[in-house]
Length: 91
Image (cartoon, rainbow, N blue to C red; front, side, top):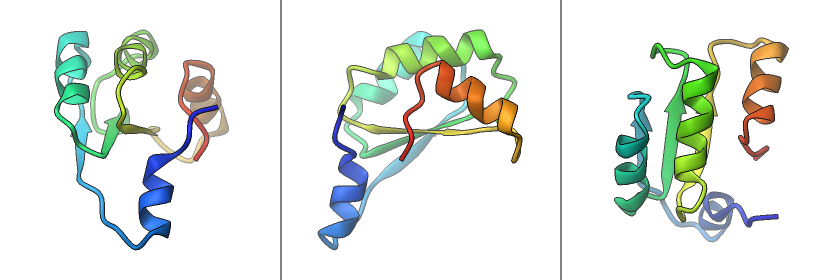
């Protein structure tokens, strides 16, 4: 299991730089992952990202050092389960 570097940073009293990923393109996701930000928030609430596109974005971001957070469309257990099934981690 990967260490959640965001939680470690906060526990140590540090701060994090974050960015949103709303464009469901693998190349964009790879560039964002390589940018060096601490947190990448994949927003499926305010973007037209399908589950298939979310899976591709999560796959592209997996090898990065950034903590990846998925923002689901709402407080819906099915949407949360879909994100987890596609590779989102529980923080």
